[in-house]
Amino acid sequence: QVQFVESGGGLVQAGGSLRLSCAASASTFRGYNIGWYRQAPGKQRELVASISSVSSGGSTNYADSVKGRFTISRDNAKNTVSLQMNSLKPEDTAVYYCNYRFSPRNWGQGTQVTVSS
Image (cartoon, rainbow, N blue to C red; front, side):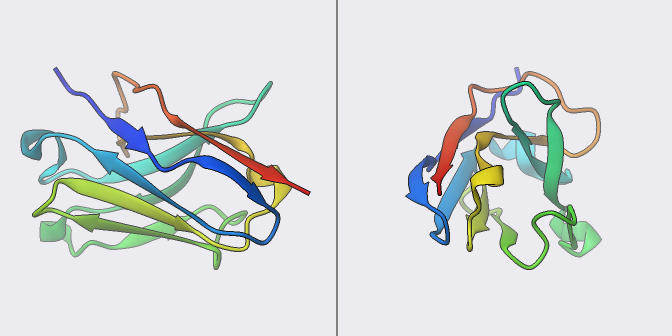
């Protein structure tokens, strides 16, 4: 069964940084495009960043709201995908999840990010 485990969230002041990490088995990650999603209270889950497989060049894409502030990366040797978040804003407050970029399924518990003003 596919299982993603997110970590690294916390409470940070506006302007601060956090680094999220997503772990899964090699068979889950390898060869797949992976995305970081977030869901704020009362809002729909949204995709904030994605990275293609290594064989596809590892290209990245970002939502306009985080472009220039967030950086997604992957380490296939460690079976992890990370999200470096800088210049955080209160509107970044949400539960963050990682999953497949296409056909996401079996959502993990996510990691809470809270940005205070």
